[in-house]
Length: 144
Image (cartoon, rainbow, N blue to C red; front, side, top):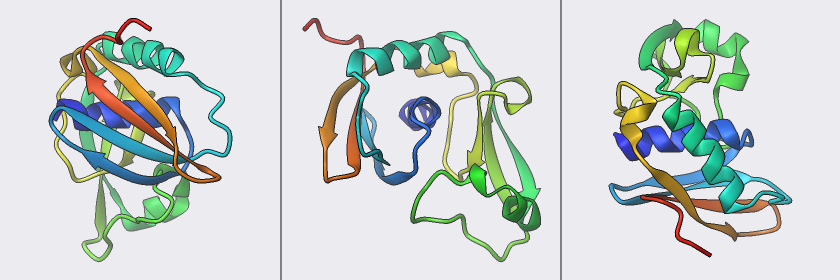
C-alpha cells in the first residue's frame, strides 16, 4: 500500500504517459514516455518527500464511464485503460478535493501520504529513445 501510493505520487511529479510499472514491497519502478530526462533523482526525491510530508488524505470515489470519457486526462497510462462494462470507474484521489491527484485505480493505498514514509529515487534509467525508468525505494537517498 505504501509503495503503490508512492508510485501515484511519482506520476504527479512526472506528468508524462506511463509506459510500464511494477510495484513491489521494497522497491518499484515506473516507466514514463519521457524523451529527455532533464531531472535528477535528487530533485525528484525532494519533490516526492514534499508530497509525503504534506500528509495529504488518500481516498476513493466512483465516477461513471461517461465521466471518464469526458476527462481522458485522468488516465495516465499510455497503453492500458481501466476496465469497462460495470458502468462506473474507481478513482484514487490524493489531497483535499483531489487537488494533488485523481486517477483510475483498483489497487490498495494508505489513508494519508504521510503513511508512505521516507522514500527516494534510487535510479533513473534510459530504456529506449523516449522511455525513462524511475526506481523508487524506501529510506533516505544515499549520499553521493
